[in-house]
Length: 440
Ligand SMILES: O=C(O)C1=C[C@@H](OP(=O)(O)O)[C@@H](O)[C@H](O)C1
Ligand SMILES: C=C(OP(=O)(O)O)C(=O)O
Image (cartoon, rainbow, N blue to C red):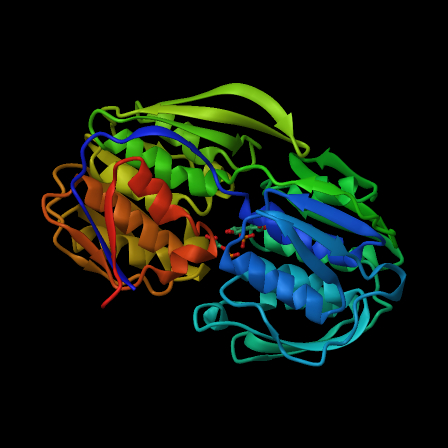
């Protein structure tokens, strides 16, 4: 599905951010583990979440759609998740496969996990290592890749663990295994990562203690805990709102309101960067929804200047570097994004893919050992961008095209549906010149 974008007039209007991907995965997984019914509203109906939902059904949960973004999950509760009859295809979703493997390790079951080409190239030992330490048996392909077969007797040992990289997926996989493990599992996080697992496990009835030691967060879960079905109202995804916000900031004359954006500080690093760059990014009308603070963000096109992104901010904007690099392409001066080696193991090597996307479209960009340097200026455009099945590279390229002299084309926009299925409608509704070439 080849798509392209061209220079656009001012964007204007009010839109709502789609449901948060991280919270939507967790709603399906925790709901399936719980006793009783979980009622979900605002679920992101993206391909990643639909993969997770069908995997949880294969593991024994009953999931029913009751309206737009509304789902009812009948959990497996006492009986527990069950050995599935089929391989568990987690699609494109790192979050899905890693959290589900963690959850399944706590039960007596055996399953084989697969994914698409992108997911099959991503490292799984980062969660298999701690799960093996707890007693699960896992076999993987070379380099810890999928397909993985994971088996557990449902009688794991608790673990005291410091993940080797800042990763909410590692933390969450271990915590989910700990839910059905007798004893205290402790995770130390020197750099805090998104805390949705902790917050949502509490909403499902678990007690999770978070304390500070030598500047690190120490997270303790005393298992086993019996999760109880609950209501989950999924807030809007700041990582998807990011594309709308940057589009409005860089397209001259724009004035856009993005409603329902989750403002959890473990997720808002990009908004801090854009504000430091001189962007008019103003959250208003703060309120609580589904246990999170949300706000409506008012964005006006602004003259941006380059910044050096503090590496300590990386965890709170880990998925936002490609779109920040697009903003940096039209900012005055230099933007440095360094110490982001984790970007090399996302849906694609996002350092290389971002550098190639900008360079092909006439932006002055340099690949650093573990980062990206961008010097802003005019964007000539005219390039064909290889997305490597990466939704965030695809959306970033289409936003760059809105300020380019010649159209920016992407090889395939289909993956955008993994995290932001309404992207094309939302952006064209605001006035962006983005089109899908259904014949290519
Ligand atoms: O826990 C989550 O929901 C996620 C954690 C992040 O991954 P890492 O934990 O690997 O950094 C992020 O990139 C991903 O989109 C969602
Ligand atoms: C990295 C991402 O997701 P995941 O790890 O779940 O594939 C993302 O959405 O940018």
